[in-house]
Image (cartoon, rainbow, N blue to C red; front, side):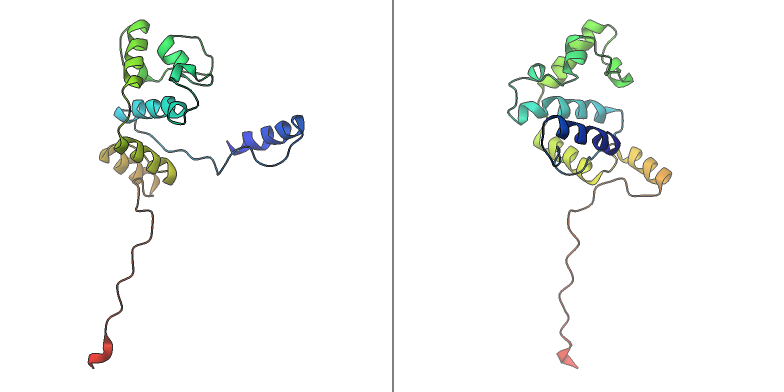
Length: 160
């Protein structure tokens, strides 16, 4: 993403006679367990423009994979994931299952969980998945509290 930004931003700025960055903050991502968590992330992404009040429904967002996954439109950039393919045996049934999946809004807890894992760039998934990632990479895969632990209050040494 950094490489793409370095190529795209100067060209965009030159073309539109502007300067500065196009995106706030740095690009963030997280590793996702492909079981239940991948489809939850699909829903999160498809519903982001709706939550941001950019569009009324996911199909109204021009830059969405919803058109390919839910409506069957051909998109060379969208490669169906095996978890998506496992939703149903036929394309029509799969698209219908995906539409129903996206229609079910994520809970506040699910939204918070996804945001926390992306913010900290940790591995989103089951405990087993996280343990496997930690063993493989030798680094923490689960989220940590946002702040350092508080210091213990000073002890009263006047009793000596």
